Length: 227
Image (cartoon, rainbow, N blue to C red; front, side, top):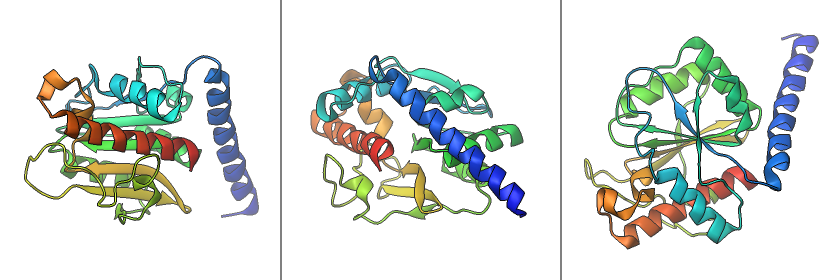
């Protein structure tokens, strides 16, 4: 790569970071927005849309002192509106498809300072991995060790992710995509955090299980905003 191309790439990344930071500062006196990612492929991107992120936002405001709007937005993965949100959440059970434009847009967003949380609602693992390869062909998901800071923010999880739903009775695992030393995407697998964030009557999870899920969600939010 020529010095000119490197300079342009660096300048663009700095621009994106500034844009994200300006959005955070602009909403500091009002409320910060987080968003649920809408994608193609027929998968249920809208899983947990009713109360999940709203409850997480309210829990973070209560325990972390954040100022997150409980009414989250929905943003398409290929939309320029993606850059309005410092934190985006993607979930579902089935197929996920990113176009080349989607992948390029998401890559620029993440390189520029954004943060993506992928939550496997059960059954999306085989679909999301090849699509994230379109975003970062040079990267592979790596399992994060239990001593990673994301498990030790406001709340301590010495054994990693909590188990919310059994599904295949596999141990929950947290994977990450690390770009230039920065965790840009956290992927919670076989945990189903989003179901635990929902109102209690939705899945009939115990209050203890819901609290663990919300605390881990708060850790992810806190990590994304501060690390």
